[in-house]
Image (tube, rainbow, N blue to C red):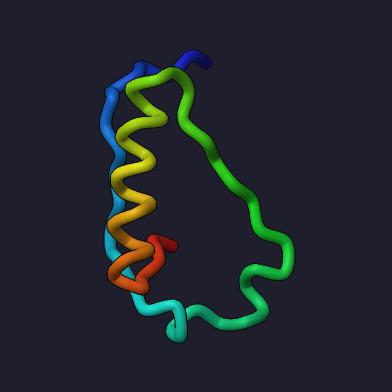
Length: 57
């Protein structure tokens, strides 16, 4: 089944890193954007949550 591209990033919430159970990231998975626009948007979000010392679970 093909999914329709929406060109949006949905993040439900940002949480403090300390709120994440330390067992959760034992085997992390990372998703990366495809294409320059996606990379640029992801970089803005990544740097913003890093400066806030938050994560988006």
